[in-house]
Amino acid sequence: MNTITVFKGDGIGPEITDAVLDILNAAKADLSYEIFNVGEAVYKKTGEFIPQEGFASFEKNKILLKSPITTPIGKGFRSLNVTLRNKYDLWANIRPAKTNPCLNTLFSNVDIVTFRENTEDLYVGKEEVIDDDTVIAYKIITRKASTRIIKAAFEYAVNHGRKKCTCVHKANILKKTDGLFLSIFEEIAKQYPSIEANSLIVDNTCMQLVMDPGQFDVFVMPNLYGDIISDLTSGLIGGLGLLPSCNKGDEYAMYEAVHGSAPDIANKGIANPTALLLSACMMLDDLGQGDVAASIRRALDQVFAQQKYLTPDLKGHATTREFVEAIKSQIKR
Ligand code: ATP
Image 1 (cartoon, rainbow, N blue to C red):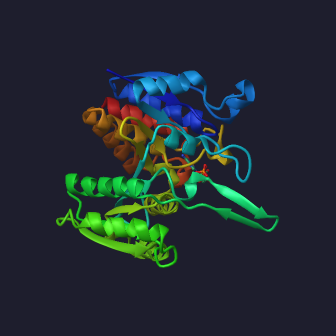
Image 2 (cartoon, protein in one colour):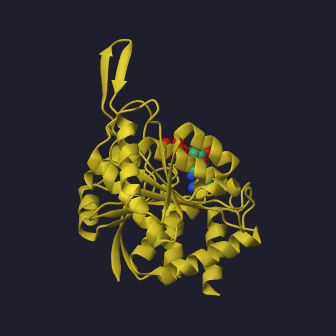
Image 3 (tube, protein in one colour):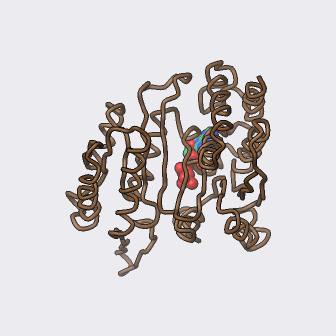
């Protein structure tokens, strides 16, 4: 039995967490949970976004299933997501986007795994006011952080039978920062002759993705491009409600949906819990409970194929609860 820490988050966070835990229980995942409310609502009550017991639980269990937490735009505190990634040195953000043949999507052949560097680039959040009319932001790229994420992408490619690894950058303009990332990629690629390696400028990558996504396999890129490109890949497979992720370091792992807290649909009972559910499946795979993950993925496919219980983001009319019950009844079959 593995004990994991669970953060419930803001907006749709509590709804999708309850949905996922319900499904994990139905699938008889061999897990016990230490569950914490975190985020804006908790801050308003206690003055802390994440209670100290929540941090302590994660430090003990090393595995966190985390719901989205709201990040106010333009002012106030640093993103809690970014804080968690840095505090626990969760340097690899892995985001697999795969077309589900049971859903009607524009493309039938998307199968892209994005490796996003997770600790630096513009996400260091270091900005300076020069004068009233001028501000600057620091874009930090280091050899250490670039090397480990690029190696992780190639290792993944080798271990998962992938054929190609593409480095996404803007080194034609950012010659020093992205230039360093690209040069490290080119060096490391030589150590993996069985994997085809190429590089692409980020704007061209966007265009190629919407024209012909089937040409891509494994992506590796600095932090900000990873944020943007992975949202784009989620659009190719049916939307943000479907894209899982894990954030890994040497010691800790945090599994979360790629989407935010979706305040526009919070408390309406219509959120799609699939992204968090598939993140939980990635967690189960890593915990050696791949059979449980497989049974959940099978049930999900069957529910998608029926088309009857799709949530509104997938052009359906079902509530979160109806969707969850449909998955649970497939698992029990
Ligand atoms: P953040 O900046 O925190 O990542 P965001 O600006 O990307 O957040 P989201 O909260 O991810 O925004 O939401 C973007 C859109 O996608 C919203 O219209 C939201 O309702 C929709 N959306 C996101 N997640 C889901 C979900 N699980 N189910 C249904 N719709 C979702």
